[in-house]
Image (cartoon, rainbow, N blue to C red; front, side):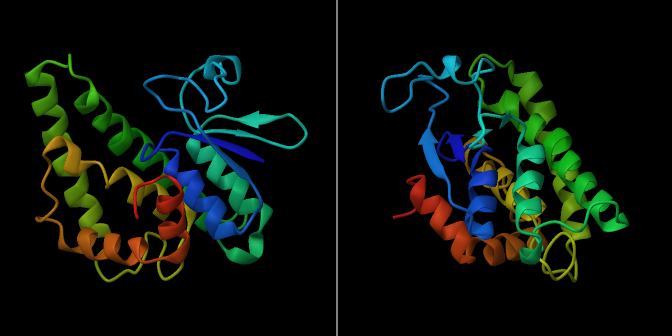
Length: 202
């Protein structure tokens, strides 16, 4: 497998999932600013959408949406329990979390990274994020991870997205459960390994 990523972007989520799963893969940097691969290839010739993550399988098939990619990875190694079994209520709860993180958090951050976004729009996005993070903080009360005591691919995704507040002036100190959770996830060897591989940790 090949994972195309941009350091610190949402592609860090499947990068963490692959490290947690222990699957063999090649990580290829596809910077979102230049869209040029290390060998000089135009990334758009690999993935016409031009964004990350993008996972190519050994048989040539591919996946290009993070929540789908991390579930695919999890299902390759069910013994690691990175996702509950398909068809169970718990699997739908995992999908609920992945959807929430993608649509309510990830996409609300997006305009904050665009220099031309009007100040009023940014203020609205920040206010919405504060409300959503307050709810997440409440959901994490008394829990190790989003699904209970077991780390899942949804945790990798939430960890990555909640790395971004530092870049947009959003203070996480009002969310003590989230901060404690982030510390637990950050200490996982697979998370450290993925972040080191992307140059985010020394």
